[in-house]
Length: 303
Image (cartoon, rainbow, N blue to C red):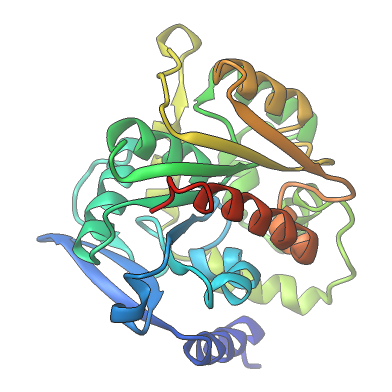
């Protein structure tokens, strides 16, 4: 039987090309390459504000952000990379830290001609986004953070795993069985729609069979000891756009994040939406995201 997920991807990619997007694999250095979805018309895109979407741990970039790309590609220069060990992004280096992911994203964007951008980061993508903003403040002008934290500390890990009822992040985020995929999605959605069992099986085969060892290593390098974490000072404008019913990083984590940002971030919660709010309520999410992006780029400080 044909894998339904492998059928959907070419269809999605074809629609993206009609929307003015193309795939580009950018060599960062020998042995390291990042897959991007980028604007097809490079000349026109340089006249538009650049928006970079950073995906979470459970899926690649374009599957995570497909609805947002279609909504924004006409007005903004949209860039959607895959992190290392997702899609066609790969490295032969042993480095697995968020800082290395951030470095690869920044170098890839520079090679694509992006000098300044707004980052939109979901979950793991938000953590890498914060690292990019810290390391490359001249590149990252502003951020929209969705259901994420500044760093995945031991205490945040303990509280998050207790809320979702799972003993470890790898067991939740790198499922080995159909039941594991169901659990992953059920936790990540406020109200998961009915999905046939064979779809879960296809998702498991297509999305969680490759780079399992490397993704375990990414998670190992992600957790920070509480005593080793100090919140950096960010100069960027930061907006939090949250799933109001997210249980992985709940509203308490959102409020804690605002405190770490010294009250300089705004927060908008979308009710009846979980961790994957951009997929669960895409129209509401896109409406709020458009408002945020308009406020960032209409005040004369946008890229």
